[in-house]
Image (cartoon, rainbow, N blue to C red; front, side):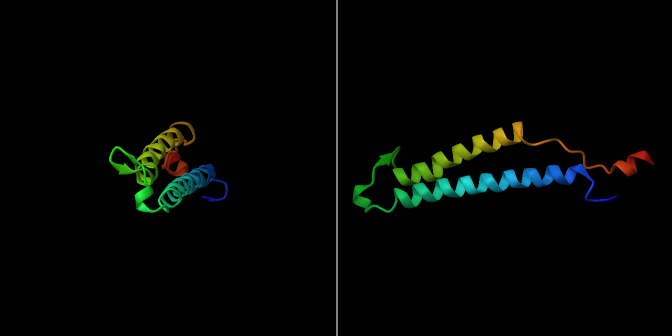
Length: 91
């Protein structure tokens, strides 16, 4: 089997890139809120549901956002790929 002609590898590479983009979005969101809002003195913090705003937005809201983005990516961008080798099926 020629690995360069197998279309599954093109799909796998595309989906891996989508995963990397999702990780970059997650890290940027977390870092931006954690160090953006969290760099103020603790006396100046605002609170949401008993949590500092920087923590709420970076960890709680970020988690919810990433769950939604991953579900949407899997539903609309990922492809169901069979793992069976086509040559073995012909035998």
